[in-house]
Amino acid sequence: MKRTFTHLLTLFALMIATSACSDDLVQAPAEAEPDTIESIDDVAFLQGEWGGTLEYLDYTSERRVSLAVDVNITRGQGEAGDPQFSVRMIFTEPDGRKVGGTSLFAVPESGIVDYNGDRWTVDSFTEIRNVPELVMSTLGQDDNRAATIRTTVRLEDGELTIRKDVQYTGETDYINRNVFTLEK
Image (cartoon, rainbow, N blue to C red; front, side):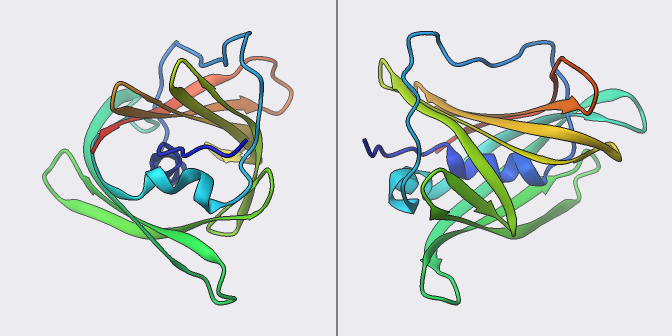
């Protein structure tokens, strides 16, 4: 069943950001029946202008940092004519300096998300009581260590949250690295 899911956009921002930390872990409710994303149209709601914060753990200082972030997601076409999103993020550093960049997001096949060339597997895509939640994962690096990276995107009461949780190779628990909190 196809659904509109706005939160994927912010997920993109989470993937680019440095890590943050929190003791909470996100899990899909037990009664949720997993679905998947079939095409970029399923996440068309991500389009638009979002603003909010990114909270992350600064590895150097071992302190939590909160940055203001503006995200603009627009639909376009890739080189082969396939639909994709352009995700432009601008972060305001603690010293007031603005940094950012643009990333590309696509759904090349059912259950797969391509974000700047990295392939993510959609673990679940659910909607319970009008609250959509996307969980996807990939193998990668965090703090120069091999890890499974899980991103959870959730839209509730107009607030989009994107969490990056990391499970290092050989470990059993996930730890939270960062959280985006955004509104349109």
